[in-house]
Image (cartoon, rainbow, N blue to C red; front, side):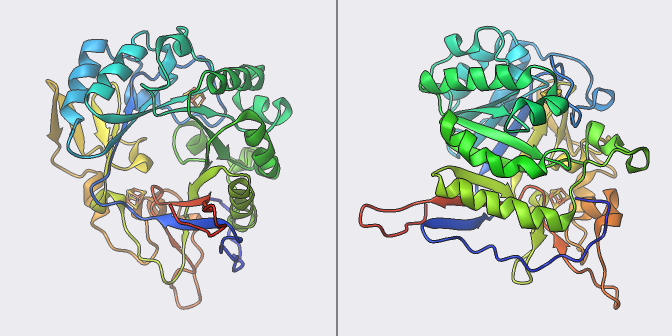
Length: 363
Ligand code: SF4
Ligand code: SF4
């Protein structure tokens, strides 16, 4: 997470009364299909994770999208489909794709930057879309717009309000970086005002532009682990208290936690328009994808691919984290790591669940 090594304090992650916290273990049988329909986007965010050198510039035609969706569909099993870009609403056939996906029994989410092109809200109904997710990286234009672009805050929040007023279920993704972590605590109030149901807090990635950021040239976007632990769980609690369902990455495993690599125990597919299919998002900047789409078939690739790394058991936890940012791992004098880093796909959730009698009930 950060380039600076630091002593991490023992932070109490217990929920306050009335909230329920828990690690979302990899749920047996759950499948997540992250489908990048295109890599094009109208914005140019500072931390953009899209890498056109690796994933091309194509927009997948409708007939190909439908064939690939069919290939990944498993109607007898819950499958979440997350439609992504670039900016997915720039795809002219997004509404048709959503309708087809629903008929294949996917639970469908669209992750948008908020611009909602092609009159998106008028072309789908709230019943067809499980969640419409908006990305915002600050509680006001002064914080958000230097990261995501001039005028983006106004457009995104306007369209979010419109979606809520039309009955769409909405969520918001906040990418925490050194540029905006000090403003995260202002988000619960904003989310309440906007009527957002779910809040996804995520750490800045190691892909695309953020991987290229150079601290020696004054770019310091990564967050110090101690700051993360002091800020993120507290804001998550505040959001849960406000009645918002919050999800945030686990990052540091407690000694009682078991390390699990999603590549081994879960079913996640990250599909790109050039046909690459990864199982781990940390691998996306490299041509080590486990699968590829060839003639509309999902083909497993032989050779040194990401799935070889998933098999390695190391004391530091996630192998890809160790390979990509070894500087962030702190060791004791005996050479053992102070913390194990969890799989980036392992999340914690906090949610307020109170029954009519006032008793706290887990979901
Ligand atoms: S909205 Fe998403 S795809 Fe577009 S520039 Fe920002 S991070 Fe990249
Ligand atoms: S992030 Fe690490 S633990 Fe998770 S799938 Fe990738 S390699 Fe495995």
